[in-house]
Every structure is written in structure tokens, then in C-alpha cells.
Length: 67
Image 1 (spheres, rainbow, N blue to C red):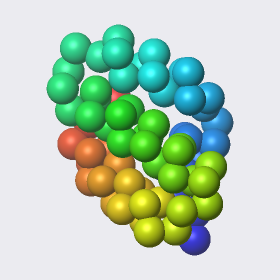
Image 2: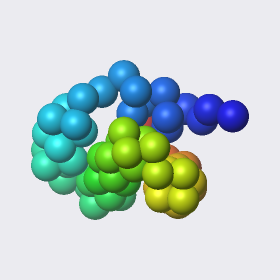
Image 3: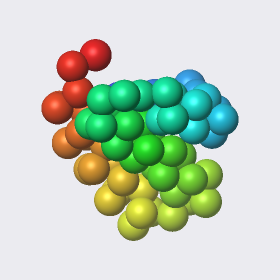
């Protein structure tokens, strides 16, 4: 099962996520992009446990972000 946060991570590079995280003034958005960055690292290492953890965190933050 793939989630939309997985799609977002797959469509952006690590540098893109880093830039987006640093540009944010809203803390929730900053945390969201930071979670996507960690999710990207976990997915690239094929680390199932951390992928599940960061997917959950990113999905919860996504619900709070008004994009």
C-alpha cells in the first residue's frame, strides 16, 4: 500500500525536501517537510520499520498542514 506521502517523497529529491524544509516559516510545514526528508532516507535504505514510523508521522502532520 502506497500513500500520498510516499508519492511526494518519490517525486522530490533530498535537496528539494531540504530546501522546502528550510524555507518554511510555519513550524508545522517545516516539521512536515522534515518528516518527508526522514521518510526519503528510510525508503532509500529500504528500512521498513523507519519507513512505517516516518510515514505515520508525515501523514499526521499532513492532516495539520493547510497547503
